[in-house]
Length: 299
Ligand code: R5P
Image (cartoon, rainbow, N blue to C red; front, side, top):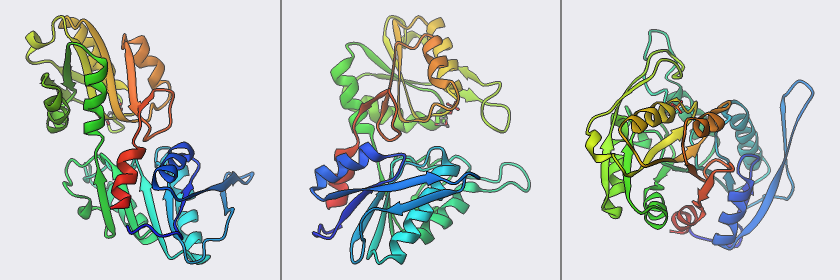
């Protein structure tokens, strides 16, 4: 996007700090969004400043999706109604991307539905490491210009700086390319595990099988994943890494959602360090994404 004086970055409720950082890096004005709830939990939003003729960059990570999506939709449509020229969404975490197939008869392919809704509400989209598995391109989900960024370089940089004898662990086959890309610039080994899950909502009876145990003994094992949600993937992987003799175990994720008590449970399972990017605001944030986002927007 060509930078013009009329641009404004607006931090929606899930991403205020990140939005402020992006605005500083882009050297354009930051403005907040007033948000609240009516007694029946309907969402209320109000822009604090006029938007007529402006390119509006809305920053909203879409975890807690059923709340954050409604807020985003109210904001995006309102911005247009009160005169915004263009509405650009920065959604570091894009929700519903894992529901990318009709796994059971009659089920919603939620990523497609949400993709259609977002494509009608905003003009352009930036997102970080979206969970593209059965779909390979954002074009299959969104009909607007959608740009996919990656935190892989930032994660590699973090590991290089903070670990002496790392081995990167991909918890499942889907993470293969991703784990490899993280390990390559570090020049360390990668082990990719096999995950079997039973049950619809992803949280029960998960088994992680461990090939290549020889690579793990005495090493600093770092589980790298795109999303931590229930934490089961990480916890099962930790159990296996312990058996395989890892010296210490850490995990790094781009999107730390930590549903329920996931953060505490991962700690209790023996994870020395839990590290995430600031895609989703959380106490574990150590990797800042504002630089890669603002650089891409500036182009
Ligand atoms: C799935 O394939 C993803 O890459 C993550 O491994 C998964 O979403 C993590 O979910 P949970 O924390 O609920 O195991």
